Figure 1 (cartoon, rainbow, N blue to C red):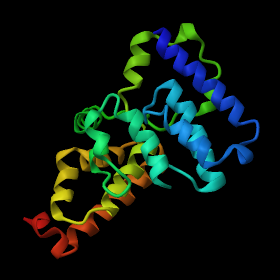
Figure 2: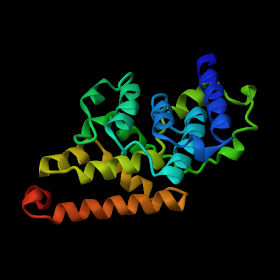
Figure 3: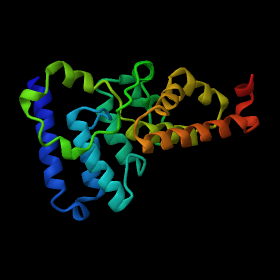
Figure 4: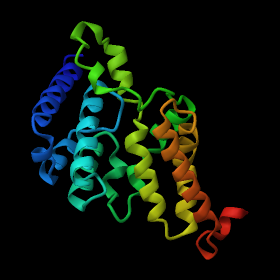
Length: 212
């Protein structure tokens, strides 16, 4: 519990310092640093960092997909718990997706994922965060982060087997589950990804097996 609280406290400090001057602080070096400690979950720490990531994207159009450096910053941290992702890259992103995690998040989709506002986090004290709840929050994906990753994977598809892979690793199933999210922006992102998926499946010789 102390480790989880420490992560939340660190994220709170980073958030507060960043928000002193978001325009000045929105640069690739800061983004790389944030992604190096981010896990794309709905944990308290990640929700605070998500707000920073969103602000950097708004200010400078910088995100995990901007460069190999930003991609690798997240991948290197993610690899600590999902070793298979070490082979992922901006050009070959598919192994970043953890099939077990996607499967769990699809079968038990959190309708509120992506709806938490940072304004409500400042009032959460240490005593209000149970150890079980804190640990479980790290297992729940934030669709605001993961849907763009899935969309990027679709853009990098060059063979029908990669479309099949996105079914097998539950990325498509997770996207379908996101259509039931409470937050409208999450539903819209999911809809965009699924339209892209449908288009990819209709492109002939890329996906001959998709209609079988």
